[in-house]
Length: 382
Image (tube, rainbow, N blue to C red; front, side, top):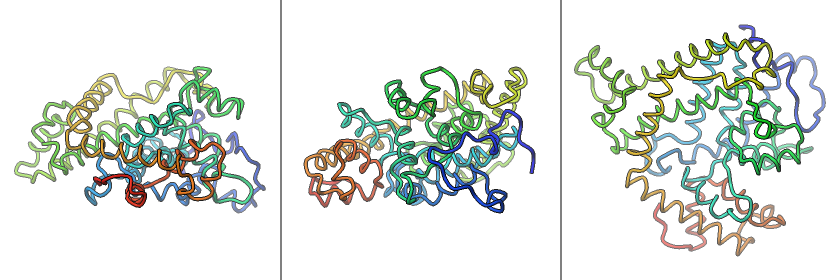
């Protein structure tokens, strides 16, 4: 196995877990390091299994081949591991962060999240990144001695990639010097966490092109206005004239992904050479170091803007997400009014609105739809 770079998160130097656990026997420690154990705990969690029935862009029932939160998380992990290996970073930590980064997402994608945030506006709001941390810190119920999964500091740091100042202050009160400190001090997370953030963007830009064309909402002709796509599509057509359109699309996306991965590796290596961090703590005190080159960053942003205009805001997508937003709002109001309709563990919690938000956020698309129908909350459109 290739040794990790000095600026990587070294497993033997982990800052540990929130709750003390009995030391592992020597043979177990030699087989699995702390970040491998984090990954395994995430994969076996209930929240991870639910991701297979949570919307990415297209609602779960709309087709079997569209991405879900789970397939998206797996793609982020694959891209992240490839880049981490080239940079001498901790692949196991990257994989753990990637697999857990969307555990707090609501059903129905960003529409569900926005609706739940509106419902919680007077009760602390709702942030899916903060919810992902709540899942692994509090909401999973697997162990006799503590709530949550008791993951390492490094994995939890990567999961919390965004956080409002208000929530960071609340977290800091509960866990001084913990994962929220950087949002108050203006420092940055580990390279592994930075990498997962960028791999997330690379993955969803690529797979949303695929899903958009598969759905019929995007065409290859439309995509010619995106320079990153048009360049590699032209290469594919020139090299393989007469290739069927689906294969053209797959080959174009494959080349796009490869180019972005190599660009990140090259630009990040240059930044690391210039800054020369010797330890992960120096990484945290420096500027963000995992990056695209300026030209690739511009092309990536142009692709993101194109997808926002032509896919995420497409009338058909908006019609479905408007219905999903209404469903989340209906369910929230019903559970606040009738908490007995929730499982006892949620119904008996003193903070009713947060209990309802936790329950709703944990739902899959289809379970939320069934609950909406069971409670007779209106004509379901899903």
